[in-house]
Length: 243
Image (tube, rainbow, N blue to C red; front, side, top):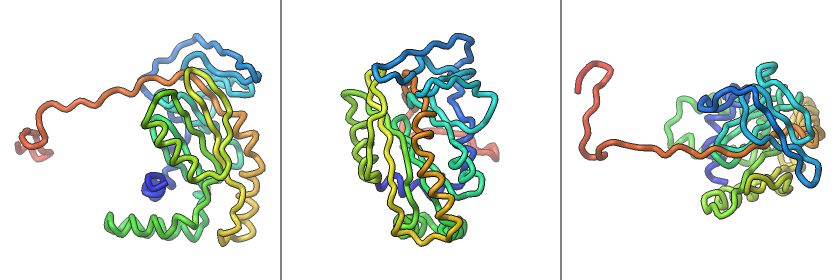
């Protein structure tokens, strides 16, 4: 859970990160095929930047709207249903990504959002302290996690994922991976206004629809990072032109 709490301050206000985002490395293609799992769920046979099909069989053009988020290396994408999208637009919903395995979404009360805005001028140590302080004042309402077989790092992320969601449901097994939906229902520990409760209830009540609008595809390999030279002996050119 520590990783998620450390990143929510910086990611929660970046709503564009969950609006029509896909990996630029995947080329557009007119070919699009799906497979049907034993339970009737639909999965895409490849990632396609033009058209995708959700678990419930809904096929949509990605260019027609901007309420989805996907990365080719994660093997799944989410569609922000109306209550979630409304929360993203008004700053009440944030998200974090542990690539290439998991996405989490959480609700941010206005009081917490104000404190987060003030954190921009704090030191890194002060921001970490504030993150820990506010961790009990945000509500992780749902998330998606992919657990590939025989992947130790993925298992660590899955353990962290299950630590923040009281309910974890397997939604599909495909492409040598298990896919999970995590969610929480009890937000009684939060201090919310009547309007905030209404907005959060709308998100929770729409969870089945959110689950059905997840789209799954084979995950691409994460490119390896390469560094030429050593960290103790290298040269580079500054913006001023100096070496």
